[in-house]
Length: 197
Length: 192
Ligand code: SF4
Image (cartoon, rainbow over all chains, first blue to last red):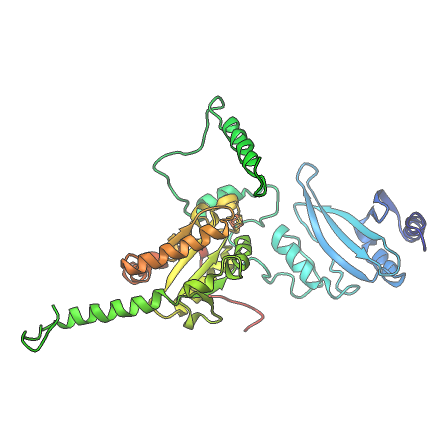
């Protein structure tokens, strides 16, 4: 319990005893990540909760369009042993459904609503997961999916200012870097703190 | 012309008298502007130095005010997300007239570094009329104060009439608000 290497070994042992690990990653000496099957998530989370990882720091998702998967990530924290545990599980991207974990961590209610809003993941078992939380009246595909194009959405919804003249410097030859450097040198030369040079 | 015992009193029309009173009002108004700070974005961090002893906004007669109904200036400091814009429009419409809008930073001008975000609007003057823009990301306190001095000048010269424009082009503003926001009314589960 005193040093972090022992902590990580302890966690490794605990998780390996509890469930089948598909992939394991030690991020640094205070963070470990385990990828497990979706059906084992509840079991592992409840075991971890009873062994001290009683705070759910975050629940979110990562979009992997090439694999056609969403990766749901649960991050747990323990106040006695300083190790963050990430529990990751991959779910189908076309039909993203994963059971709620509000039975283990009731506070996950809002994280699940957020994940539903930003990725479109459904959490059956959580009665509120479909309610809006952050976005108000969203009218497009969930915005944190990789196939959502924010600049196209912005161009469609929000009028942008039109300038009569284009002020940006496009000519690579005509850049102002030297002028800027010269200004800086001059400014530093003047900066003598009130003393005569 | 001053009227004395020997000259007949000049008869002023109602409009002229109104204008004179309005000028008197403007004089007092521009020397005691109260700010409603709706600190929407990171530009808000420039306000503490401009309010405290270093730049001392109070010497211009300006001070912070807690409620929209008592404030003269709506200060939009930085980017506005859709959610904030809804509340901002509520706030703007609650303020008593004459009211002025000062927008800090490049975000309300053209979107700034958030020009391609799905959650942040690009141009504030499509939704509420803006009287003074202070450019910069973020503008330093000198330029913030300069913006306020410009506003005072403008009130003196009667050019700061964004609130009149809002009345005249109310339909246009409402339509823009509707196009970008969908609905201006806030539906909020925590307050219903
Ligand atoms: S202009 Fe720059 S400093 Fe101001 S709100 Fe936008 S990003 Fe932040």
